[in-house]
Amino acid sequence: MKWFSARGAVASRLRQRKHALLRRYPVPEHALPGSLALTHRRCGKPTCHCASGKGHPMWSLTFMVEGKKRVERIPTEWVEEIRPLVLEGRAYKDAVSEIFAINAQLLALWRRQHQKKKRGG
Ligand SMILES: [Zn+2]
Image (cartoon, rainbow, N blue to C red; front, top):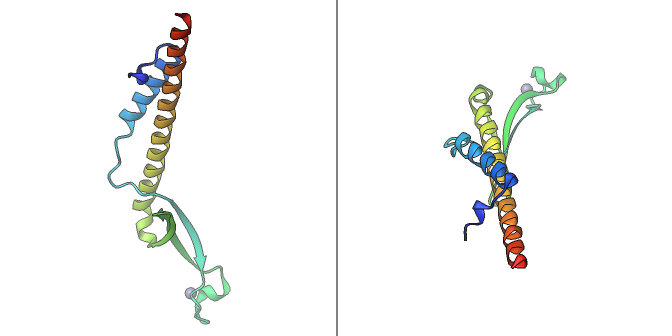
């Protein structure tokens, strides 16, 4: 069954988009999941300058592992290197979702085309 080779302009547009995505998004080996966020935390020392301000800047990466949310502190000097990997991970996930959605649409088109064929005799 070659449901991925459904006929017509819509199917061929979907396939083109899918192949463009596949070419553009090989699995990024070092990509990271989740999101990077900047928060501020007071260290608690009464004499520290942060006691009167909003606290020390603290970056963290929030991500899921086996259904559980995890937060990992990221040293500020790493952020420049880590951020693009998080963006890469998100772009890859979006591309994979889009490819799967395209596959589902191709499957639906194929089924409709084959139903018509049968009814038409
Ligand atoms: Zn402090």
